[in-house]
Image (cartoon, rainbow, N blue to C red; front, side):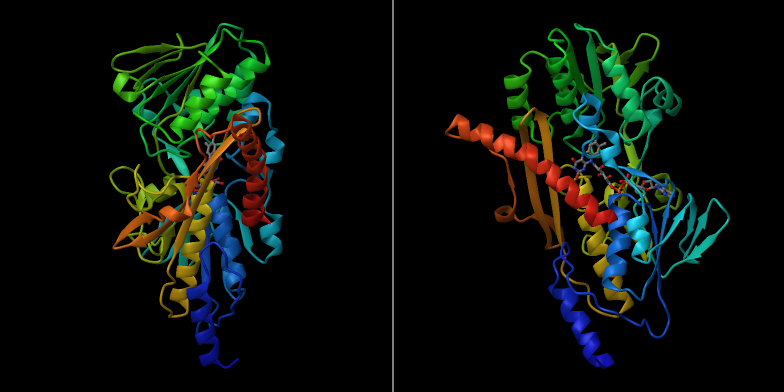
Length: 438
Ligand SMILES: Cc1cc2nc3c(=O)[nH]c(=O)nc-3n(C[C@H](O)[C@H](O)[C@H](O)COP(=O)(O)OP(=O)(O)OC[C@H]3O[C@@H](n4cnc5c(N)ncnc54)[C@H](O)[C@@H]3O)c2cc1C
């Protein structure tokens, strides 16, 4: 193929490919020089970006910097708490990406120099980039809850909002509970990672109680917010499977926790005290520290990005994807912070980077979010949204998405649908893990 034809081919291929389905693999020369893309963070966003950069353009020099050798998925980690899943099944290494020719460095990225286009690593190395993908996930604003701290999170009061040792610690605490005791979950103000996550967690804890005959035990959700994702579906499940066992206190009813006393195990809002036998504080969060330290965040701690490319609105050639970014202005506070969002944002960033490196127009992106929740045995439901940018706004394509129905004419059909969805979640999980890491 001569260079003109190749250019025309790439242009057509990029423009035609939906963000989530790159089937063509163009090779580019970048004016004789091997272009370098550095990716910070090997979670759903970063791993997907690294893989698809190499798939789209094998000539690229792609380096992934990740601090941990094994990644533990948060999706399905609530099932680990209740004993319905095992943490080993949520873990993956980086050999799949290495085999694809991606240079994987296990280290902590400690600084970004946007002017020099370099990334500093804790081990002393400095990496140069033409484009940088940043997907560091979240870090926590412990100071927002007086009395709670990172030290408590790592020892006696795990938040377990990053899956791993804290998940197992919280599981052990649940297993140590006696019938009649209370498990308190505090929910921070949005936006937070995984909008339905706290309510799934409440469901899984109640499922544990039910399976262990602890019918006098309770889950109390102290929420800073006045509504939540898939509320009708969760409330229906709670009523059917755990009547009287789960209580939700909205922000307007004094659910916003601002204080914690570890000695008495009491979380407090300005109006109420929530005393538990196990208290699971989910602290407010913000973009991963590296993004904050590099000056890529707004006053609320998230990284604003160009909706069409995922490029930081603050620094050129840095693309922020996943939980760390503030993508669009969908309610509540932009696109949901989910693994599925992170993966499609990563693919959009890849398309934008390849287009820029090749002097091509940016392809028109589409974004997808899919979120399954399992609330009880054989009881799953989901929401799917497809987004596009229209008139400078991120908008839902109404005809393309959907949410599981709360009611169906026939109860047997409703049960079958919920059972099937509780099985589909495992297919979704296998696919997204393979798409990112294999
Ligand atoms: C309980 C729970 C359940 C969930 N369930 C679902 C679900 O069912 N479906 C769904 O779609 N989403 C779910 N999520 C949300 C999902 O986990 C996140 O949205 C997703 O992980 C975001 O991907 P990310 O790449 O932005 O961040 P992460 O997956 O957190 O990855 C960030 C990576 O960056 C690394 N890192 C950070 N800083 C540095 C640095 N300075 N140097 C080197 N490495 C660094 C970290 O070690 C980490 O591996 C759930 C979350 C929780 C807490």
